[in-house]
Length: 236
Image (cartoon, rainbow, N blue to C red; front, side, top):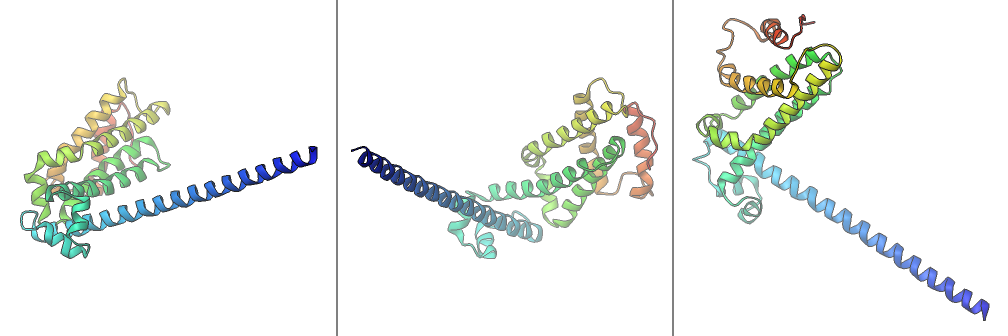
């Protein structure tokens, strides 16, 4: 009787173990499929955005239709409308994609092992240079950037918040290391961000520092920035 009970327990344990292994296998398989599907969706969406950006840059937003995007991408109208309900949604996605490129560059600068005071100057010039490069490389689309400034402002809200957070971290790092003398890091980070935004258009059109190259202007900009940050420094 005892051995019969033990055998029954072993059989039950074996069944439970096999069932658990089967469930684990199914769960893992489903998770992998979901991940693959997510990656496929992301890739398809990005393809549509890239194609739309090229068409917008070449023909302008007004002269590009949803059908044009569907045909040029080779994905078809049904696929396009799965991701975007209207052309304005595609346009917003293009702006977001361009801002993500800029955000990635700023993250790279923020991660560098350099002095906080040098990092601030590099962040400023990276922002301005990337904005100019983005506008220049997008041909006819650049007119839309300036004509629909409120649309652009709405889309870039998250990017603006991320950039201000980067400045807060660098300023906090500088204060901790005795590089900066700041009473309100958050306020200074906000002011820095909005000052840079104000310089975007004149920088794009080459109206900032007539006759000065980017490299020759850096020490002058650094002097102004360092003075505002309570730091007397020289660019190395």
